[in-house]
Image (cartoon, rainbow, N blue to C red):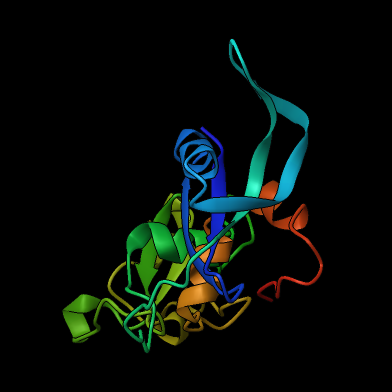
Length: 167
């Protein structure tokens, strides 16, 4: 199912919701469509509206300040765009730069996306010990960047240019 980006009334990214939930918010006049899918339409007996890609809430929602995005395996794969940090092929696992056996933690700066072969070959060693340099350094995405990255590459490229896109 396609995800729809939800913006606060102040145009800050809040979350993503399913397409059905986005349509419900628009029909209840709780949100307005900022950008629609060009080829998708939602049709019913008495309505025909474009499928929303980005919606904005009509009322401001106060959100507690989040200093950092919560770490997750899926988040690491999305951050690294499913590319192995060692060889550049499709990544399916998450590797710890400093292995857990050596005290490494589950954190944004200590984990990278990796293909299963490279993860197995590196084993419980650091990249230097294994002779496997990283193609790119891990980084900690902001909460807004993590959410935008979760939309997927195709949806991310289709977002309006005024919406800041992560690197």
